[in-house]
Length: 265
Image 1 (tube, rainbow, N blue to C red):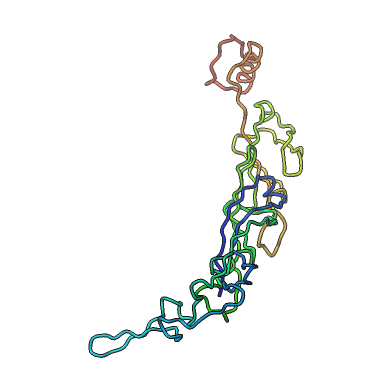
Image 2 (cartoon, rainbow, N blue to C red; image 1 turned 30 degrees about the vertical axis):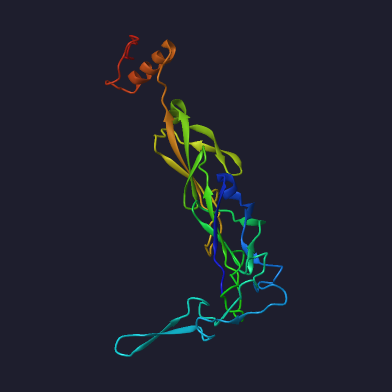
């Protein structure tokens, strides 16, 4: 005889998913009644044979042609015994179980993904052992399933155990190369930007992603950085002059000129 499973949802942050965390959750599972120890009976009373099936647990039905069909007794659910009226435990109304609120701490592993669920064995409902339940059946609690929702992060997105980050860099850094600061799960790191970097170019920082769950290799995924060039929408007169000079230097005939900068001879 197994009790019902309980399903509950909890929410965590992206950082908590990366590092792992613990959450205290309140549930109200069915628990064995302490007054009657789960029997559903008042002290000094006992079960009696089911009158509907005479204690057999089955009922016979006559069919056309003289055939008989046996079915499980609906009054005692096939146990052959019932709790007499007036003999029910008042605390649990004869059910043998009551609902009690309790708090349970759930350990959430690092690397968990949005929508995954955790199972806690034996933390679900106790089976209903009173009324028409078989008093000799072995009772086993159900399980608790915790569905984990991971909130979106303002900086990072995720692809399995890999973390994705988009880094905006100035136009001049993209042209000349340089060094930029990139956030990670463990603080910021400086990475080099190659000369002539384009929007969409990517670099990979190995082992700086989420921990791998269920992998024999273990370890962590990668941090994948995609560069996006932060193009200026407005230029000062001096900046435009310099840009037009660069266009002249590079032989760009399609760029618009407004500063009347002379081409080098």
